[in-house]
Length: 228
Image (cartoon, rainbow, N blue to C red):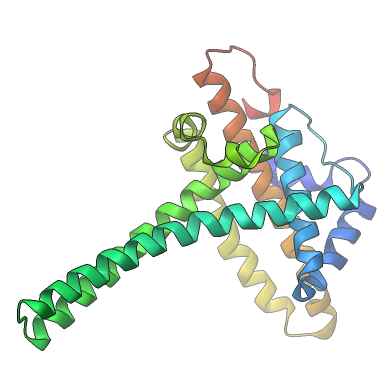
């Protein structure tokens, strides 16, 4: 999976594609280019799950933009809903403790413990989002991102777990390289290239894990050859 993912962005006529992605990444602070990159990454997921072994080209910019915006909304929804529910629970516990006359130390301890509980909650959200986005990219509907029946067998698989763990180590290495490159002006200009290349590789790995797991769950014996 790692070898396939890292080689994937450089397949086919890759120079123009990577250059466009790099430029969009460089101007991502303008928000609109960031949505276009996100839309492209959704296309990577879609093509990977369908069995295409070469990265998609940039094109149909309106579709990329809409897809990227929807993907961002989905990711935001996955983060905000648990956060709201968590906040309600925290306020209920702390407020209830205050009403029954809890002392300051007890309330502070209760607040600290609930804060610690927020950390694994966010890890869970980050774990679920790639699978949700992949199902959205494949099905083309927002509802697919929240289809627990389709997502559950994927996120509980070892393939998906590996697809989530490997990028962590890749990200550590990439951030170290980016830090070194940022020392010089020329190196700083290469950082968006490095990050775009990495994003494409990582989303390729997400797509491979989803394709293999979802097909296994459906009892299909066929899978993209690169996902094996």
